[in-house]
Image 1 (cartoon, rainbow, N blue to C red):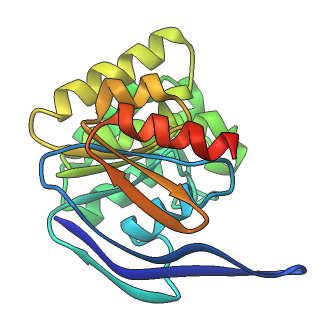
Image 2 (cartoon, rainbow, N blue to C red):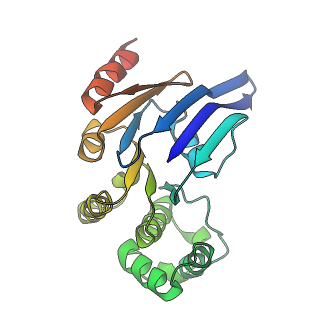
Image 3 (cartoon, rainbow, N blue to C red):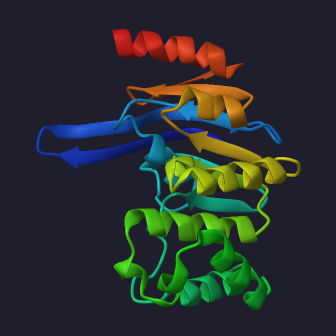
Length: 218
């Protein structure tokens, strides 16, 4: 279970304060995947990082119960001086997982070849995302946070991602941000629109899509 209580996040810019999350409160439903729509810079990725604990809100409270992933597609949690394998071993120990199993499953899923044994700082953003995705899939989370990761890789890898998510959704839920309405339809039952720091939740992805179209047309 994840609940946000009056969450606010602001960044200071030369033009003044930029409030990307403005007093947002929401209780994410258990075992029901939710999509989040929003234009570039609306704060979708920031919201995921706050939910996952990678970034702290300026105000408000995040309540987490259960095992929640880091934002898949966000490689900022990796130590750039360590190899992909070493990062997997480190994360495995944090989550009390079988180290060798996690390493083997991540290497097979990520499909980055010998780069798996090279420092993560040498990776492209896509390779970091593949590593993060593979590692996330190797650990059973109750909630997966997904940040546009389905756009990573070629057609075969994207199909592999979809199949992995379909398998996980039998026992877990997703909170997914994406620009693709079709992607959200594939994975999510509910959807929210984030605009000017405020989040509005809709019962279906189609209802959210109509509201988002009105936002873009305004």
